[in-house]
Image (tube, rainbow over all chains, first blue to last red; front, side):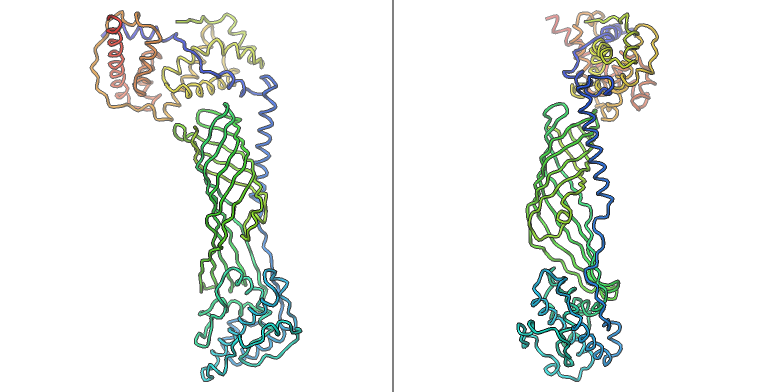
Length: 399
Length: 186
């Protein structure tokens, strides 16, 4: 069938022309290779590209650098080592060795310097209480014929203040009673435990005859005199953002939105078999406000640099503690850290965004940010290292 | 309609661009941008997307011009058109705009001379107002003179589908033209 109207449309449309989009040449000219366009555009593009490369390089450096080297906060070489495995098989020998340990450690002392958070007096008090409970438990394990009232001397009955001012001299601890030296030896690890919110350290009485019933106490005793290693490792924070961008010019935009940041830290403290480990989890919700400059822009892909401020609010801060004795997990605690500070940061980033649908863009950024001290007691990466690499993923709606 | 005759110095301009003369590239741009805009706009109705595609296409033209070999007047424009058309079709494929709505349309051929009486702009807008998939196959088949097989390869759809959609596209456009003709005759 002859379709003349179709042939006519072809003729009419084949040479048809229409107005070009506004600003098309300007956007093309700005992206022509620098050597072939006016030099007024070239320095800016190169400067942005150089800046982006510098940010990317610095981010990569910070990312691949080990975040927190392992550090030993307590290394004590008290000769008689009292370990669970050593103690349990022979109760009579255990008592003798405990007493020896008490004497020796009491002379060598000073763990207090490693417990800056507490006064020496309170550390001693705590340690003494722990030791009392520890020895009570051991004693109870040794013999069931001794009545409780005869073997246990209540810690409260001791003149604590007076005791704390006594000169540090070796003192023979009576059997089944509080040992000063042992308290001082175990103080470092216990002070850590006490600081992070563990319960009272009187967990073991005569009826509870094994460390399994009070892993906190058990951990302190079995590790006394050993090299206690403490490792704290902060993971790289990842930020997820739901953002909005508003174009001021073809290339410059204001970007804001809502972000969620998760800071994870892991720690381990103790010896290889007997230790406490856990994870700290701090979450923030924040509002970033940034200026974004696209130095490459296409229908689907933009490559850009951005800089600005972010105000974060801590919404959750807690820690999980796991107590391990002989490699076995005996106790798990989740502790709220109780503080929810604001966190202000200033940063610059280099990123790319890909249009997934209409005005919806998926983006990824890496950059550098400086985190101002928020004066809380949270032990987070931002405090240890205020200048950090940042990684941000998200979805952005272009307005 | 505005016709731009191929420039006698087209080849010279191309040589200047190859030597890095940005001003010569701007002259080539000015000569061809309206024509290339019309090609892209026949397929895509979103003006922002048209701008994005043309921007990428011109940059591609600029960076690939060293590969272009001049084969007479009009060869540069044909080469540029091919780049714009490829980028346009790529966008349509990537954004899923080559799908077809389920439509039924009776094909009634308009009168023979009707197209000549309709202003080009009105005709252009009628084509643009076709649904996405139909607009694409119509443009490729009627204006670019692609075969069903070529269209099926370009859009990654079955050849039989192309034929039936071209038929429906023609029916839809014929109805628009007939309606327009009626209004003109009132």
